[in-house]
Amino acid sequence: ALQRELRIKEQSREKDSKLEKALYQLKSDIKEEVSQGLQELEKSRLVENTGVETDILYQQKEHIEKHLLTLKQNLRLVHEDFDDVPTREVTLRDGKKSVRKDKENLEFQQQQDDIKRQLQQQMSRHAQTIESGRKQSAD
Image (cartoon, rainbow, N blue to C red):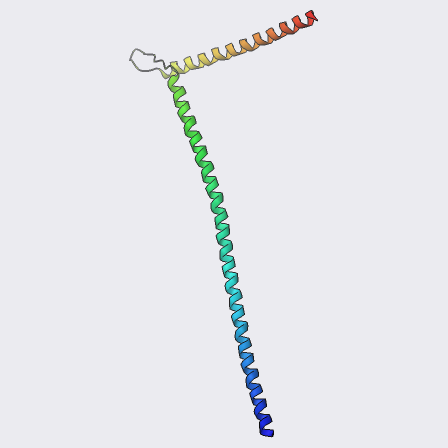
């Protein structure tokens, strides 16, 4: 009976030891799975963030491409407008173009345009004044 009791205690200790080892192994496995899960989660977040950043970069690229296209169109229009402006060449005695003369002509043309615009504005204001005076006298 005593030997049986000792054997049962020994078996119980062995079972306890095996359970402790199994429990320790289980804890290690759980820690490893949690660690791997966290690493995968971090990787997936990085992928998601990278996806969001990629979308933002793609949108910025589209915006820049549209802006570039607009600039190219504007440049083309400026070239067309420039080509429509009559260029005058003034020949000096030696036959070279006079850039200064062209510049003076352009400035003179701009001054004339400014004076015409001012005159039109004054005439418009004068016409409005006359019209308002006519309406007041009619009332």
